[in-house]
Image 1 (cartoon, rainbow, N blue to C red):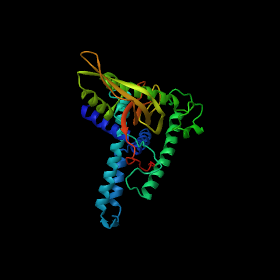
Image 2: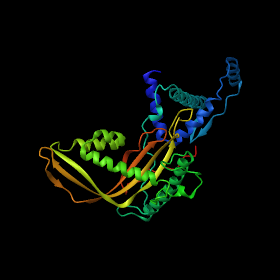
Image 3: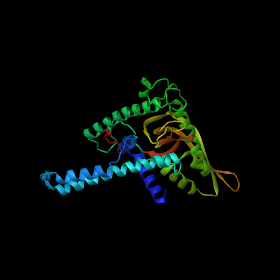
Image 4: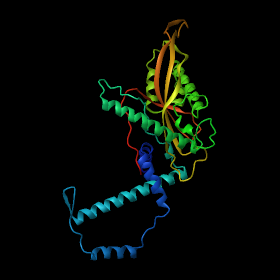
Length: 337
């Protein structure tokens, strides 16, 4: 496998990881691979003779433009080539995964259509239409949360919980903060990770940041660490939660591309938006003398952070993005493919 082919397949994997429609089409195509057959030269010759002897089709019109037989044949050929290219790409992805030449399933994932729901629009001078749109998106988010919960429960991928059956009303409780909710262990782990990350930022602990974060958010945290004055040491203090941390949006897609099931976990990649509402403060000490030179009063901080995990790895959940309340949703109409 050349480096060029490997890069190409990784690019395919990146596109697939961020697009549910491509993923559905890809897995559909993978089922076709086992049933593909190729015509013998004699058969192809007979087909060509039949096409040549057939009467030329009449000129048709499409979108107000005349389509000649030659143009129609070119379009058909281009479509066939695209289909063949997709099938070859899927075959290559499977071959790479099975031979362990490259782990295409570890390609970076795009941000899914996670969403901060709100029953009203936060736009200045919002109209009735804006409020109606926000309300509709909040309801869709609730339904998509339930779908993701069912996917995760079906593959027994809910962290710290043994689900007897995914057919439960608890699939509608993704946003619940009750101690017996399916996502209660995840919320507890997310809070611990949140505290560790903030402590690491203050202590300039880049190793912990690289372990518990990814993507753009990791770059933002690293930039924050390196902007601190090296003459001082900072200590982050956690004074408790004003309200319990809460999962407001969760999504799951199949992102493991191997033809065989993973050795552990499931094929799912999961992203969840967690709302933190905490009291925090910072203490600053002189690196030279050790004396405390400053501190802040405990202040309320509200953050929406996107946690991500590939469920076939034993690695921890990582913080990959930060969302802000009031921004337009990235919602799109779900594809039926």
